[in-house]
Image 1 (cartoon, rainbow, N blue to C red):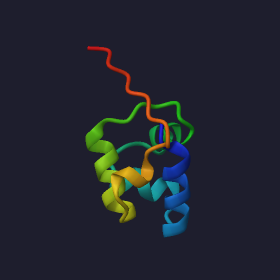
Image 2: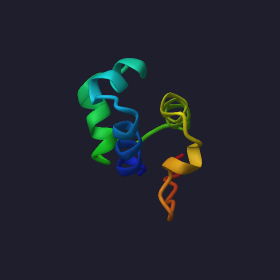
Image 3: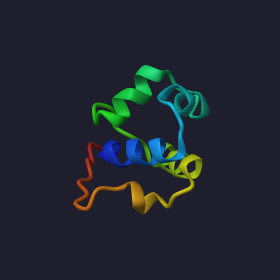
Image 4: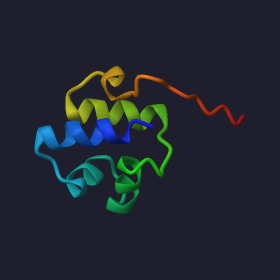
Length: 71
């Protein structure tokens, strides 16, 4: 999960967790779980976060990516 990198870029942009949650139309507790790697992200959410933080999606992904394919 890219939570650590999201947090890093959020802090560099000067956004609070509450501001990010509002921009993403979610609760602050849900957003907090994303940064703490307790909440799975959809591709759409990851794209939205990257857009808000003005970074490329690849910059938010960990070096070793694990895909959970539970279909």
